[in-house]
Image (cartoon, rainbow over all chains, first blue to last red; front, side, top):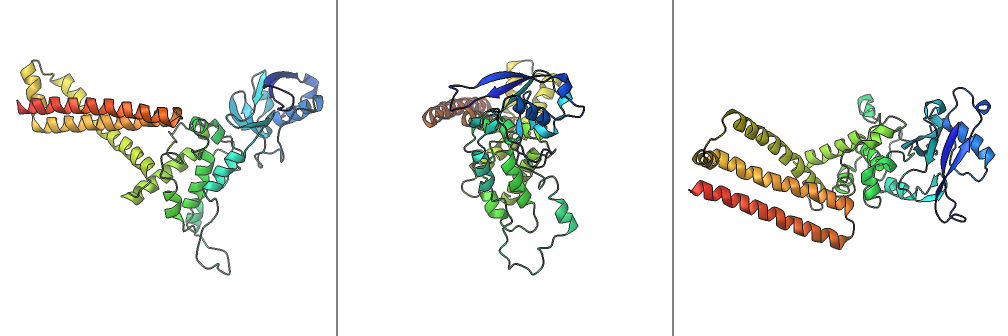
Length: 233
Length: 113
């Protein structure tokens, strides 16, 4: 099985290059995921760098560009991929080394939407209650694992990574706007009305296409817009 | 609408004008398919009737606003040096305004005749 991997070590290389790797058929087992193959390749060449942790699509560490499409290596079946399997770091992000990118800009955008409950009422003795219907509003939002597959596949994010918040952060913004217990709706909406933070989204929907958890950031962004319009009328 | 809502305002303008443009274009298509004016006086009379004249004037304004928002989006996305972006926006505003004034002048002259 043939692989073509993006390699870059800023300490040694002047510029990135693609390196070919091979795995023998006897090393492969049925049901193998791409991450398993990467671990075998790392045994061949221990300088190969990539992130991984839980290995079952929960932690979101191993987001990468697989044959041109962002995804998690640990839940991508190996046999479904066309050879040579081309692996690159998440597009548009600063590369630290090989497939490892600097996600600090992504996390900064996440923090910018205040991804936590804002409620000025005194803390109750029990939990803050919510009806089952209100709780249902959060389905499809809270599941995000912040793997950055969506934001780094978004052309609007590529062109304005410093000003547009990107689909992942905006999905989280809607997650708290939609929460019946949150009281900061006005501030949250105010902070998104400028031409950049939310309105660089042109409904391209690459984010929906690649999300490994099957979430829909485009719909969340549409909901934010709808709420803004309702408020301003 | 509060200050600092340029993003929302531009987006709303784009959506609202799109609806008007869609409906009026449909009307224009049907009109020219069903009973196209054969002569200049017929043309002039059609464009000069108050309802059509107002509709056309709104159409012109909607086209210009829609084009402004769309082109502004393209420039914000792709042209990052602020000087070049502002220059291009200025040229575009000038061109669109020129087109608009010329079109409205034609409509007004026609209605006055």
